[in-house]
Amino acid sequence: MDSSNKRPSIGATLLLIVGVVPFMAGLFGLYHLLGVGMAYVGFLFLVYWAAILHQDPKAFLPSVLGGVGGILLAWLLIAMPPLVGQAGTVIAFAALVAVLFCFMRGHARLVVNNSTMLFLTVATIPDLKIASNVVVMAESLLLAAAYMGAVSGVVHLVTKHRSKKSPAPAPI
Image (cartoon, rainbow, N blue to C red; front, side):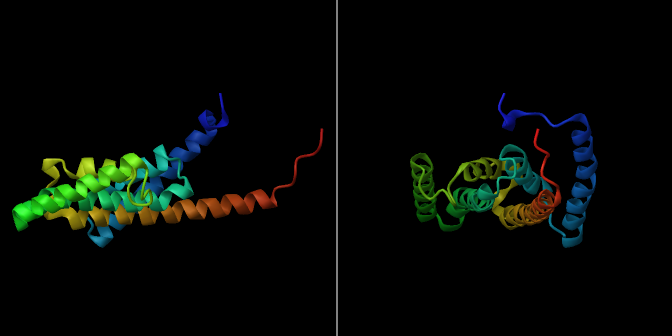
């Protein structure tokens, strides 16, 4: 078993659970304070970047940009054709083909990636009404990303600072 699959100790897991409560309370508080709805879109980002990608700093910006891109592409596909007509349909499908081409070829990974496809898929769920909720969805994702990015950055700095302070292990 490699170290990336190693489970945290029971104590570390309990500390993580204790830390999740104020973390989520802070995020819920921000959503309420700022009047941002559709918090589940932000939570989807948290699950994707924090849990699935293990808070990989290199994947943060592509995850954010891909998520916003997926939401915008969903809006383009669902809302633009009724607004513009046949030309809107052609533009929307041309954009979809271009994104799929880039995704399959691994081009433009900063904005076309797994996050794009995840948020495109979720944002096109009919009950979410992307045509009228595109701004709220993007706000929700960006709020969660800013909050999680800031918390992750602080934790990284504290961890880095602590590792510099701790004495080197004694030679055996």
